[in-house]
Image (cartoon, rainbow, N blue to C red; front, top):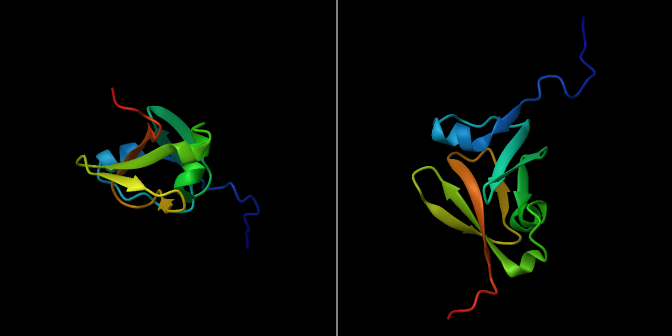
Length: 105
């Protein structure tokens, strides 16, 4: 009987935007490429909070930014700081940030 001791065997790097556009189901247990403001990031975890995504994208302090999640078809949803986002959720294309300290005029 053969056993596989290497935990990296079978790990794929999945670009969630491409899977969403092609209508594919994103499998769990892999690494993921997410896009935040046109920049790609590779993450090893399946789920992250809004705050963790903002920090990953270099938005410091994260409290001064709003994170939005864009789905296939153009639907945009605000992601709360402590809200967990799982990249295996169907249809996630990318994330966008908005500075909260914008002033009008």
